[in-house]
Length: 336
Image 1 (tube, rainbow, N blue to C red):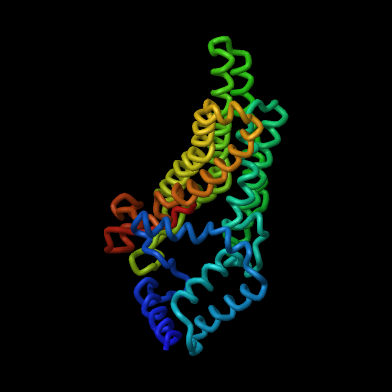
Image 2 (image 1 turned 180 degrees about the vertical axis):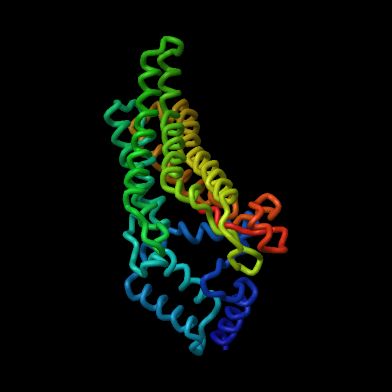
């Protein structure tokens, strides 16, 4: 009886807390910040990195049954959502192949944390600074390439140009600011060390925007699709493309701020405590923990601020698009 009651209560809880499963659609409402945050927490969930081959196979087979409308017995909405989460975290939607673990969105924080810690290490030489900027942009480039839209053939040279541009801008700014600080007599030594900690942010932010433009410049030349409320393509818009790239650039510029600005601020305060003055050997381990926590919290929050599918007034688009629809609001994919 107790088992039966537990099963009934679990089924009721599934119906109350879990929405009906919709294949290929987000589980949470994307029109609210909370819904987008929960959605991106699923996407970057590092627990999916521990998915076994058997679990992945079971998830794919379950979703295939849903797609082919096969009858499912004893399968809850929660299990279906979890299966979709696992497949989306591991399998590329266009190629159908597994994404290399460090290049998955769920692996961005675990594997990227090492780079963030390296970027924020104090008293770095120019060589060390260039090394960590190179590692950071290399990881970003691998993530961008592995999660690219592979539905259409894309010239790999575009990714190479974006990669070189990102590394060049990141290293140039980091080195220029460091050299300026070392040669400047306007700051005291202690102030120079403090400012030096914040050098990675402008370097990474500029590199991210540069990389974004180089990777998506074709969108500005060719335009992007805009759709109506029924998900039908109305036309290709240059106005929407410009807005999409601009909005994404703003996100990319501010995304590194909580990761590369907050930890130095926290460490500056902690290093003044009697504990770290007594045990300075613990500075790097504590900084590592602070970096990982800030990275893990900041990434989904920053991405969730703006919806990926964005609205735009039809009157602000090209006249040829306005003539193709009676709807006053259209939609486009902003990207991440």
